[in-house]
Amino acid sequence: MSNALAIAHVTQALALLLASNVGPEFDEAVKVEPHKPPTEPPDYPTINVFLYQVTPNTSMRNNDLPTRASDGTLVKRPAAALDLHYVISAYGDETTLVGQRLIGSVVRTLHEIPVLPKDVIEETGHLPHLAGSDLAEATQRVRLTPTVMDIDETSKLWGMLHQTPYALSVVYQATLVLIDGREQPVPAKPVERPEVRVLPFGAPGAPVPPGAGTGPGADDGTSVNGSAIEAADAQQGH
Image: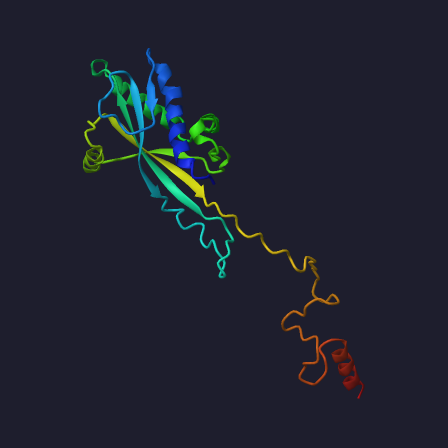
């Protein structure tokens, strides 16, 4: 579980992960920018990490219900389960195919490291704009999975980016990001009778098993226990 800074924290951590693994492969520095693709493509090696959509996670969206009791008191802190959708674009000198080389390195990096490492999350958590984020303490790790975007979806996405020319890109989905509610649930009531007794059948005070017939319930009016045996002996004596 994480607070409301989790979305921005995942984006920043993804950018740092790519910068740490893609940059060393090139003779010149590679700049990684976690924001919308530029309207004027840079001519130096650049990777752009753009979060273009946030959607509810279909398998976990109702996993935390119910969160309130019948009287309205909070019994469980609600959590929003989200998937983050990223388009990762590459820019550079086309004569040396820098963009294609960068995309190849991005794909290899995220295939080798599909889960955001904790040390990367902790390092990005020191940034001033992420102060207070608790993503590093979350038990659920964020996994990055490549997704397919057809021509129609690609056209719509880049069409929404006004005056932004298309660049060679790959699309990834980050799953699962859980954002906690702020309200604290009401503490559970204390146990009224903490003592627990375990007794075998037949022990004093133990419940009577169904059909045992230990009380006065036999057809001849005698009880099905030692009294019944005494009644049988008396009849044989006559």
